[in-house]
Length: 267
Image 1 (cartoon, one colour):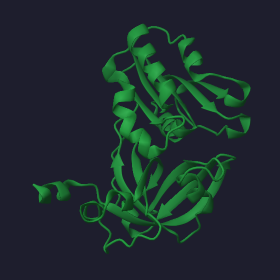
Image 2 (cartoon, rainbow, N blue to C red):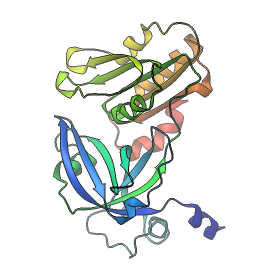
Image 3 (cartoon, one colour):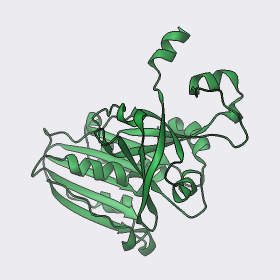
Image 4 (cartoon, rainbow, N blue to C red):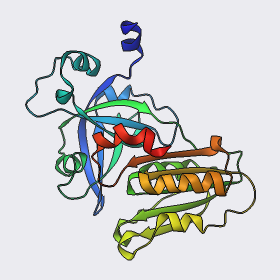
């Protein structure tokens, strides 16, 4: 049984930082490359993600690195920390995989990593995961979230069929965080600004989505996401099978604490 589980586990990809780019004051693009990235198999979902593994300082890990073996041989406090990031772009021909990372100064783990990343730095990745892509057989698409969901929303907009109707609500700090979001769809793009007191939940509640079936992607801060989940399911009567919703993070919680609480909080 253990051997079958190991065989089916997602492999760890050893990549290197190729280049970085500051897209906005709080968003840094990290492009990863290397031979292993050329073998990466994108799963076709627009919220396709990988987990970045951050080794615990001072811990010596067995080589070749194997996360499953690490979990079997080392205590939990020595396991690498994991952070999930959307694959913003994947270019198998160039052997490049692009991650857009939210940065809030020296706060957190992955933000400072992205800010300090330099070409040649090793990056350990694991994946892919994901489950959402815009469907062609619905009347309207709703995409709502904050900065943490922006990369997946941007990838989804690029994948919209020509003329597909969509409403996008994005909560960011201020106008400096706006990005160009190319799409072939017919999109009502609504930038909301936290610095001006805008509220994602209130904005979505006030939307007129028209008649017909709606597919929704709602991701970001867990409190807002939970409120919108109830609104979309109970008040708007959306089909549960057409709703992709997840709290990527929770205010006042570390990522590790949030993962432990997530299942019960979102119920």
